[in-house]
Image 1: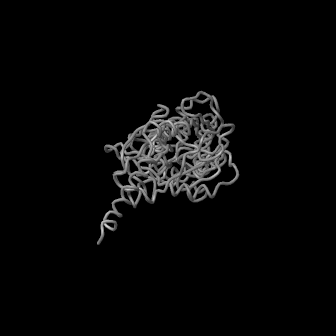
Image 2: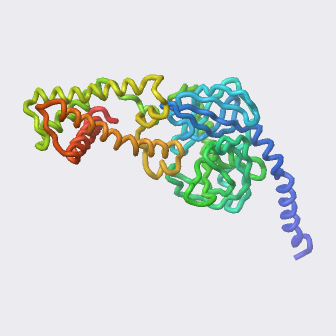
Image 3: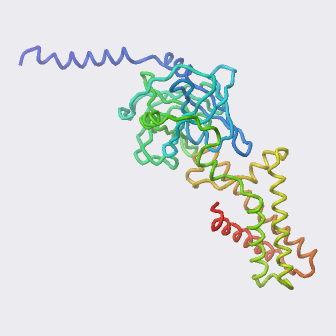
Length: 372
C-alpha cells in the first residue's frame, strides 16, 4: 500500500470538514436572518379571547405556523418582528391538523423566506436555534441541541417529533427551529411545563408535503374546531332543556307534581329561562371574560389540553361551567318549589341530584339528536 492510498481518505475527510465549516454560519448571522423572516401573530377566537403565536415566511405573503395557533380563530393580524405595522391575516391556504401545521396568507406583507432543510438528516446532539415570540417578547433567539427524536410523538402530534433544548415558552408555537446552516429543520409545536427543557418541534419534511398542497385562501373561521364549536340554535336550546326537565320531574318519584300540565309548564319555563339567558350572553355588550367561560366546550382530550395553552383554558373554563350550570338549575328548582304549590321537592341534596339528572338528560338528548 503506497502513501497516496493511505493519505487519500484523510484528505477527503479534511475537505469535508472544511466545506462544512465554510457552509456553517455564525449564531449572530443566523439570528439576524431568522428574525428578518419571523412574524408575531395576534389572534382573536370565536369567544373574543386573544392569543399570540409565532410564524415565518415560506413564500409571497405566506406564513407557516401551528394549526393549534389558528384553530377556532375569528380574525388575526401578523407583524414582522421588530416592526409596528400590523397586517390582516386573510385566512389559511393549507392545513395539516394531524401534524399541527398551517399556512396562512397575510395581506400586503412579505419578507425573505427561510431555507428549508431535511429533517431526515437531523441527529441527536446537533446544535439548533429557535426563534419566536415567547410571552410576546418578539424575536427571542435561543440555542440548544436536539436531545431526542420521538418516533411516537406527543399527546398533540401522533407522529415523529424532534425534542430539543433551546428555550421556548407559550407564544413560541409556530416559530422556526434552524440548524447551524440557517436551514429550518423543525417548527416549534409545544413545551411541557412538568419538566425542564421538554420542547418539541414538528419535522420540517411534513411542511415540505404541505407546501405542495397550497390552495385558495379560506377566510377565518374555516377549521374543524370552529365547526365543532358552532352555536346551538335557540329552538334547540329550548327543546332539549324542556324535554329533559319534563322527563326528570315527571317520572322521578322524589319530585311530587299534581298533573302533567304543571310538569309541562315548569319544563317550558326552564327552557325559556335558559334560552333568554343564552341570548343575553351572546350579545356583543356581554363581558367577554364571562362569555368565554359560558361558551366553552370540553377539549379533545386531557393529554392534549395539558400541552396546549388554549385548550387548557377551555378545560378550566368547562370545569367551572359544568358545576355552575347545575347550581343554576338547582336554583330554578328551588324557586319552583316555593312559587308553585303543585310542585314539591324538599331537601338540599335532592334538589341538586334532580338538577344533575336534568343536565345529564339534556346532554344525552343533544348527543342523540344534535350531535354536539
